[in-house]
Image 1 (cartoon, rainbow, N blue to C red):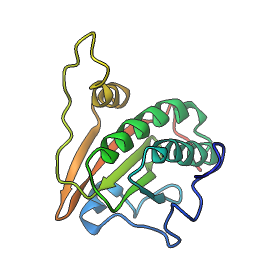
Image 2 (cartoon, rainbow, N blue to C red):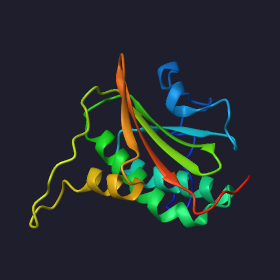
Image 3 (tube, rainbow, N blue to C red):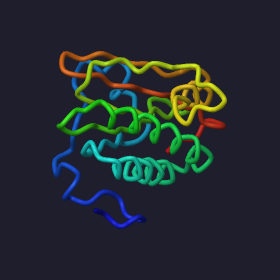
Length: 165
């Protein structure tokens, strides 16, 4: 297991640059990206949640988007937690993109075609609020792309003001 302050190590991340499948190109916006997209491949284990948070935090700070670090950490935590509960045995992809000067996009791909469901959690519920938080933090700008062997969930955050990187 990697140390708490480090990014995932080569033991739990693919050495070659992982890519989302071509079916995701419309939400990935690779052509007009303002900054180099980043993607990692993580195992379906609980410690992948903290690894994904660290990965997104480092990338956003590299882009000078410190104002989005906290919300992005919550979003990627919820999406990776949902993905890790699917029962898949391969690896999930976690990505962060800058498709425009006003948008940061977080993507989590997994090998399950089970759609995420936003539920109405009761006041005594200990779970079930994750997608509602994603919905609130993104102001409803999130969605799912089904793939032949899985899905990609994406969530968009708006930057406080246009920033060129």
